[in-house]
Amino acid sequence: MIRIPVNSLRHTILARLVLMYLVVILPIILLGVYLYNWSYTNASEEISRNSLAQLSSYLEGLNREIEWLEIQQFDILQESELHKIAVTWGMMDSAEKRSSVNYLLHRLTSIKNSSPYIKDIYVHIHSIGKTISASNAVRTLDQQRYDEIRSIGERSGARLMRQGDSLQLTASKFGGTNVKDPLYLVQIELDNDKLKDSLKPLGVYPGSGSILIAREAGFTLSSTGTPPELLEDFIKAAKGVDDSTMLLDIGRREYHFNIANSDKLALSLVSYLPEGTVKRPLIKFNLWAWVFAVTSVFAIIVYAYSTYRYVHRPLLSLVQSFRRMEGGTLDIPIQHEQKDEFGYLYDRFNQMLVKLQTLIDQDFKQKLMMQKAELKQLQSQIKPHFLYNSFFILNSLAKTGDTDRIELFTIMLGEYYRFIARNGEDHATLSEEIKHARMYTEIQQLRFSRRIRVQFDELPVDMQRIKVPRLIVQPLIENAYEHSLESMPNEGFLRVTFERTGSECVIKVEDNGNSIDDAGLEALQHRVTGPAESHEMTGMINIHRRILLTYGEGSGLFLSRSSLGGLQAAIRIKIREGNGDVQTANR
Image 1 (cartoon, helix red, strand yellow):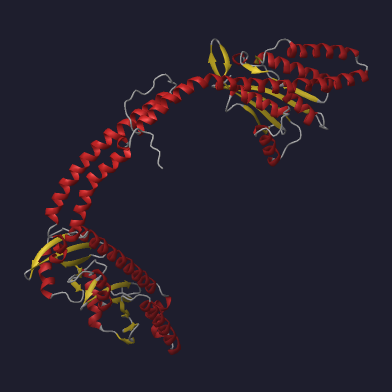
Image 2 (image 1 turned 30 degrees about the horizontal axis):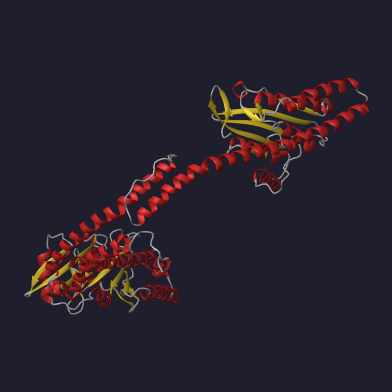
């Protein structure tokens, strides 16, 4: 059984939308069914667009085919054997002549067979009085045909020329002593039957057809079944007209013409269709189109108003309330009187505001207390670490009997632990932290002054008052001594530097110890910045975790290869200004 969170079914938005759907859509459906019996989706403009697209596609394909034929024609012009025949025919013996002619015939036949539009391909060699063709092999040069094709080529700049009843492609190569006559002329004759066959798919409707017109060449070619008077009347009517669509009355019948032009080939392609074929399914379309338009406008107005009143306006009220809640306003409930699903949502939204106001103090404060407890735990883990190393250093000094250095060391050690145990604060100023780290470095210098050199820069004034967690710099210096500098056979070098750029402070600790490869460096950085895998975290993981908890995303410990050759550990701190001191970003 369906449970509806409203008082009754008649108050539901579902019932209203179903009723509204029937009121608006049912008349449209009935009207559509009626219109479907009297008309179908084909219209005159759609037929024209499709026909023009088909004609343009055909012309583009024909242009690509002609371009390919021209390339083949150019290749023939560059044939060395053809040039040899034209220039050295008289000096060649019978075997050479036969070999060259056979090679040329093979090339011509290969080109002819590569395209269905080629009827024949000729090479007219005036210097030897011969014509070589793919279909007729070698024959005596037809001087009249040769002069005619030359004359047409000189008069016309078009790519396609007419000779007789067919279209031709010609190209000549000049050279030798007679600069007026070409060495030879290559002529490609297009096949009218194949062109007619290619026009057949353009006439898909009863009584339709197509006409190919070469304007400059004065050549026309129509598909099979085209009435002669239609072609003549169209050519007369189309003179000086640039329209791509025409409607002409020819032989007591109206024809719909679509025209596509190819400037590259100087060709026009025309498709014709009896206008009765176009209008047959559209006889009553105009009347019912107006009825449909008026009905649709009325239906849209009714549907739009109903949707706005019952759906959009209640949703807008709910969205605005959610946006106020996102902005932190939790004391403005939604005032409403609706009894539908939106009324149910409004009630639950208001209850959610009350619960959020109740829980926010508990949950938020509890998270802050848990974060602070975790921070204290992480700080407490690092306190005993230096003490162990200090006893080892003191033991080494005692073994050497160097009482002066023992005295100096114990004083420094006392100052060192005074910083740790001075009070219960979790944070110290950066100047105090750096002073503490510098004290540790001086303690280590008592041991390694001859083997390890230290560069410890001065802390910039604008960084001295930044609040930082205790013991974040000294462990990095200790790590450099323990894992790198102490085991070096040569002189070690430790460098501590400071940078500040905008809202970010950087503390860098780097050495010239043993270099680490890229894989090892990536693994180490992953261990430092990755999620904690155990309850005990010490060293660099500890430092990164404490900085991240204190300053938030973007801060922490980042490892890279030092320019000195060893490891560089950089502490990055995102800061903000406030109350005269530089405070932590996310404390």
